[in-house]
Image (tube, rainbow, N blue to C red; front, side, top):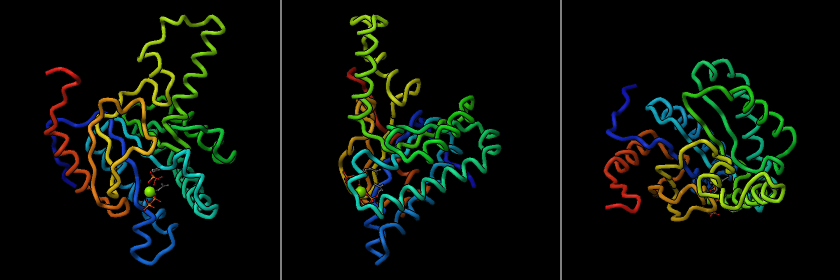
Length: 241
Ligand code: IPE
Ligand code: IPE
Ligand code: MG
C-alpha cells in the first residue's frame, strides 16, 4: 500500500470508537455484532495509523459509564477485549520487533481479574518499546482519572513528599494515565455525536477535534486520511496570534 504524505501529522491521535450499536441496528444484527466489527476496524486503523507514522495512539474502548449497559453487552465487550489480549500475547514477538508499547488507560481495579493479569503482563513485556505508543482506554473516565491523580497528590502532600507550590499543570499531567506522553493533537469522534463523553478531560485542553457521521464499523483508512488532511490545515494558536 502507498501511504499518503502529510505536511504535519498529529504526534498523538485519539479516537472515540463510537457507533457500533447503531451500525448493527441498521443491519438488524445484535449490538454485539457491531462491537465485533468495531474491534476489527480498531485493529486495521491502529495498524494503518502506526504505519503512516503517528507515534502516539489512543483508542477509547470502554468508559467508566459503559458498565451501565445490559450485562450481556458488557460481557460481549469484555470477551472481545480478552480476545484482543490473547492475540497481543500470541504476537508478542512481532509487536516487540515493531517496537509497539501497549498501555491501558483507566482504572484497572474495576476490570475482571483475569483480564487485569493479561493487561499487566502485556504492559510489562512491551514497556521498553518506543517506536509506537498504543493506548487502549478501558474502564476509562477523565473525571475518574483526575480524581485518582488528586488523591495521590494529596497523599504525597500529606506525607510531606510534595510541597503545595510544586503542584503545577505539568505535575498533574505526570499523575495521569498518559504520563510522559504528549497531549492529543487530534481527537476523532465518528457516529455523529458532538461530545467527549468523559474522554481525556485534562489532556484535551488544546486538542483539535474532527467529527464525522460515519459509524465506527464503517470507518476506513480513507476516513482517517480525510481527518488528517483537515488537521494539516488547522491553525493552532495556543492562545498566541
Ligand atoms: C461504541 O459503540 C462502543 C462502546 C461504547 C463500548 P456504541 O455501542 O456506543 O454504539 P452506539 O453509540 O450505541 O451506536
Ligand atoms: C463513548 O461512547 C465511549 C466509547 C466509545 C468507549 P458512548 O456511546 O458510551 O458515549 P455516549 O453515551 O453516547 O455519550
Ligand atoms: Mg455510543
